[in-house]
Image 1: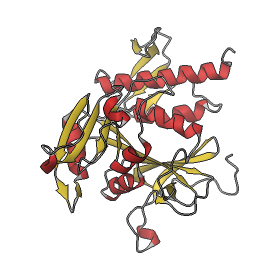
Image 2 (image 1 turned 90 degrees about the horizontal axis):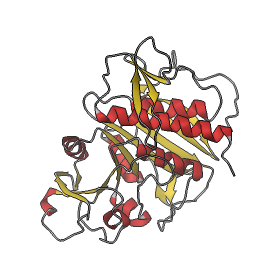
Image 3 (image 1 turned 30 degrees about the vertical axis):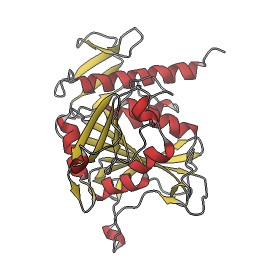
Amino acid sequence: MDPSPEADAEERLWSLILAASRLMRSGELAPGILTGFALCDGPDPLLRPVPEGQGGATIRWCPKDGWHLPETPTQEPMRSLSELYLPLCAPVTEGFTVVAHLGQSIDSCVATANGDSCYVTGDENLRHLHRMRALSDAVLVGTETAACDNPRLTTRLVAGDNAVRVVLDRCRRLPPDLAIFTDGSAETWLVCDEARLHEPGPVPERGRLIGVPTRAGRLDLAAVVEVLAEFGIRTLFIEGGGMIVSAFVAENLVDRLQVAIAPLLIGGGRLGLSPPTSDLLRNAICPSARLYRMGKDVLYDMDMRRPRDGRVDRPPAGLQRIV
């Protein structure tokens, strides 16, 4: 069966987003210059500049506003596709961008008590994860997620290159037969306590072993970010689990936090997001947020660097069904 016109349009928009991300990460985009681009023909999504005054630009880079589509989509899912992913394709001129994601049940669990987590959220959110991997330099998980889920962390469901896979394993206790160590699909960087670099433990067949300092018996997450930046990583996607994402949030290292809520009641299990405790509501973390429906799940996309201000960021009044 031939794909529908809607599916073709969505695929072409994703190719445009992917090409913008590749151009940004190549370092060839001049952030201070207004430039129009067109999507090149060919198997790999790439952008070519279009001279000013010449028609045919399908996307523009605006120094003040970021990526802009000359014809802004008004129909779903195209509107949400561009709104959610294009801001992630902006150049990281200095520093480091961290996006973290968790998929959890309504009662805030990412897995049952015995570790069953396949899958808390549905197919649309899984597709979102693959898109986020394709837009990132590296995708990171913690020890428990790697051990329990044995994830591949590749972009099998969407077009796009695989990111570097980063696994935090302080004590080097993960089994060496995990897919991320053996499948050769992408580089895998294993991060451990620097004092254990020369101890026995798994070493990725394709990748590197990295040691960082520890603090209070845990890996120093700020040091993890710093060493990844030294190796050329500028956009990091943290995919889990709950403890790792919560730890990065507690250290104020997350720029954008995405939490997908599934209509599922587990009734106790492994906790999802657990931010630092606030003594008063006015002291609670209150980022600006947008909501997206993903199948039966709802994704909260939160800008952790922009606190919500009720005077300028007031949501629509009244009752509104989003599903």
